[in-house]
Length: 169
Image (tube, rainbow, N blue to C red):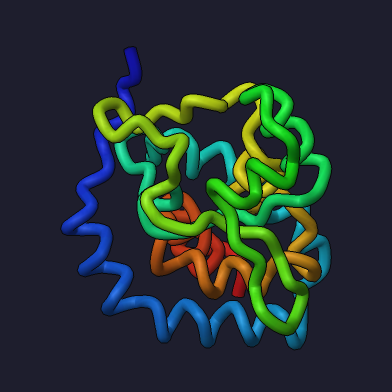
């Protein structure tokens, strides 16, 4: 059993609402002028984040956001359900207009989230985007813009940026 206290979503949303502008400004500054060894510094902070954030007590990403599904994800998950990729897309996904034209869930919360225990019913074969979320162990130069968005939705990202602001000036 986890000794990490559950995420208090009400408190998190309030803190995020008050801090998001400051955090986004900080992240923009870091993006424009990254400190030396930024990824190593973030990697050193990451274990501390996971000592304080229990994703299963939250699941806000699955409740309020949608992952992008790549073609490999679609084929794998469709096969699991004994469906064609086309049938899977028709049943659960839509394709964004313009831009990257990503495949995304038609609705939130995610159709694969069990709301009783916040567990994913397809965890072992979940989309790559889900397995990498919240992307805090990725190269910052490639994912900094994602952190700007996620400070408002993900307590782990919020906690990471809080720690970054303390340690990385």
